Length: 113
Image (cartoon, rainbow, N blue to C red; front, side):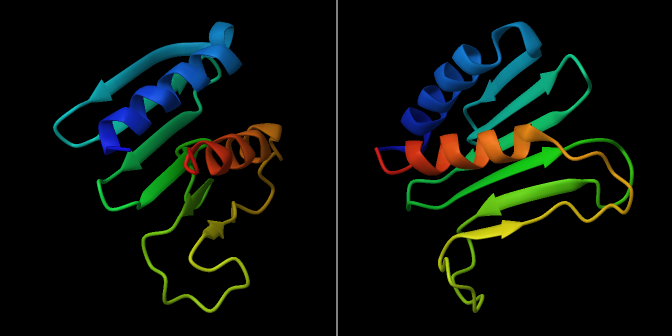
């Protein structure tokens, strides 16, 4: 499945899951990037390429390290889930969010299609 096809599928999934929470949802065909801004200010970036690689980035605020990522761009990391990596939110005192878990599960499943 091409990067654009995956992004279109991700766009449909996000629209279904977060319909009323989406402020804007933009797909850039040139950079193969989907950018979502939720009504609470959370930003989501989804990137695919045509080589089976992806990255999901969730920016919770403008605070340093108040974000998490889920990707498979670097398969050299020595983790049990290799080549998949979850880079957790590292901001001390940041609120926890169910969004992280939902997105991680949803897109991990969708990339296998």
